[in-house]
Image 1 (cartoon, helix red, strand yellow):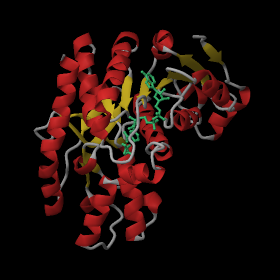
Image 2: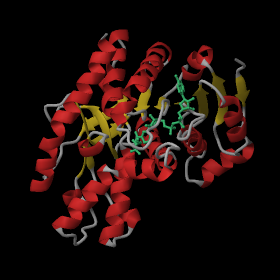
Image 3: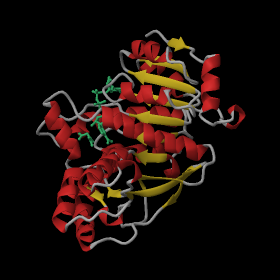
Image 4: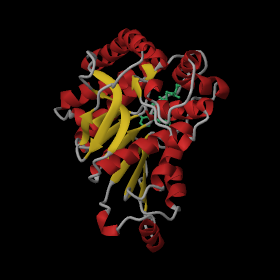
Length: 341
Ligand SMILES: NC(=O)C1=CN([C@@H]2O[C@H](COP(=O)(O)OP(=O)(O)OC[C@H]3O[C@@H](n4cnc5c(N)ncnc54)[C@H](O)[C@@H]3O)[C@@H](O)[C@H]2O)C=CC1
Ligand SMILES: O=C([O-])CC(=O)C(=O)O
């Protein structure tokens, strides 16, 4: 299929960067590739990455419909040049030189499905994309959005191991939407300013494996045990709440695009040398007995600089942690088994 290359760097976009407080010479060139860029998440995520002044080159890849999305987004007068790539033959070009690869490719849930029900289709999609990443941009930071994240991240790790390119510091399951939800729901219930709220969310990204640590939330809100239990459940079921509201038309796309953009921005800031960037993410981990686990992670020039510990847990959270381990373990094993075949 035809390769569309659209340049959109304008003089006014550079001054826009300066207005935001970045000295132009201090902002290195960074290429971001979005795989699944024509989808429900991919399109708004591509838009948000086009607005990010840390991005100099934005590669939009999908199996179809990318030229239109790329042409549309390329008209926005911000820093990055936008390139659209359509079909497998163009995947290598999309990935070449990428610093960050964001993967929202794959099918979403319909009402009544679990994230694990997506495994059969999405596992194969992720496998193919990761084989191409290993070949064309083995040093990129990979932001995995495709579900089930609890299995797709272990799949990616196995594919990279097979190719001899695995670096656990560079592979991330994107769980930022759980944090975004926990912050929003906590602020609403606790009547605290949402912009000031911080809540770590640990574990994984499906049902009870999502464990928000409201005991560590700031600013402190006066919430009863029953309210904390309800907030925990709502955070764990946040994805299902959207799937049901969309009634067969997919799952969270807009809030996920926002969350994906927040996480990619954190990765870029880390790559560019910031040393104070902390986000929750599902990464290779030794903080529990599970080989992958979501927790706070400090990002830096090499990706994960430090996997931060869980901190003090309430009795309710300790119980939640023990309950989630068997499900998370089995989803991880399912991914590893698939990729090892
Ligand atoms: N990690 C998280 O918090 C969240 C993850 N998701 C997951 O993100 C994924 C995508 O969701 P949506 O964007 O709503 O789905 P969608 O169906 O709207 O878009 C998916 C896109 O992937 C593309 N695609 C399929 N196979 C591909 C391949 N081999 N290479 C490149 N692109 C390919 C499709 O053409 C489509 O444009 C789903 O698996 C969903 O469950 C969704 C919300 C939150
Ligand atoms: O629920 C889903 O299927 C999509 C997702 O992961 C989320 O919204 O958290």
